[in-house]
Image (cartoon, rainbow, N blue to C red; front, side):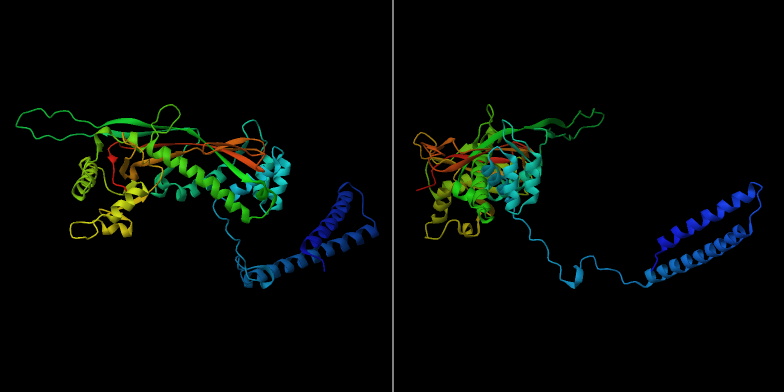
Length: 426
């Protein structure tokens, strides 16, 4: 059965024949009897085709008017739609790590390995990336995966600290560091001038590197289940080092300035040397009062200390044998949430037996995250395992080196307090 397009093409041919005969007559030549008959026949066919096309177009419009809309969520042939299983955070990056480890510096081999594991997006990214002296540039979307995983592995990120992108390696933010004032005055006295003052909070990328040894058995065993092991190791290593930086790095040289040195010196004080419930309670209260007196709005205020301190405070009892801080069973200390980390040292002070307790308004903290990461691999490298130098070659391992960049800052240096010289531990 001819379609509308077929009929329109046929009508155009008829029209051309009619136009050719009309041109002959217009040039002064009379049409022969056969030409006149052809003209009449073509004219009749043109009208017939036009009428047929009009009827078919009308039928299509009527059919469209009564058609049932198609459900865009329905699968063809009546099969139920099957949503794609969401990929866990870090899976794509783990696949990229293993693919690079498998392919070395041959990105075609690495891409083929990613394709084999069922990650075409990773394969496409590897095909577009050529490893140079600095390794593979990880796409920004995959960097976000490791950042999301670090929120769980890093105690600082787990407090919900705001992360802001730092695509150019630097971020300038204005902040108020002085407030206007109001004054009562007498009659006919000039109003004293008062104004707010501001300065800049500058975050600049500090490079964090980590070495993650991967068993070559995992690299050879191309199963997506191995991705979780690889990504877990990398995320844990980076999360722990981040915590140490965000808490205690001094900000000198290429280091991040952590809470210990970002908090104003006036809000850092030594714990009472005599360890008892009265003095501990007073020190905790002083830490809270220092922040309240600085007019820091309480939105995400929380404690941070070593697990040794947690255990000591949970066991501490008053004179009647009652638990001194029963709320710690709910993750609270003096009505405020707390978290623990072994990244706070317990060997500080002259006796190497002291630690620190932090109280921070984490809504005032900012983490600047660069948008890129570099991965490089080696099956011959050596690395330090504690105090021992280990050869990846002899252990049948592949070492993955990850290089990322970030910075940390407090909007206001009075948004926290630190108790030093703490010996609240066994």
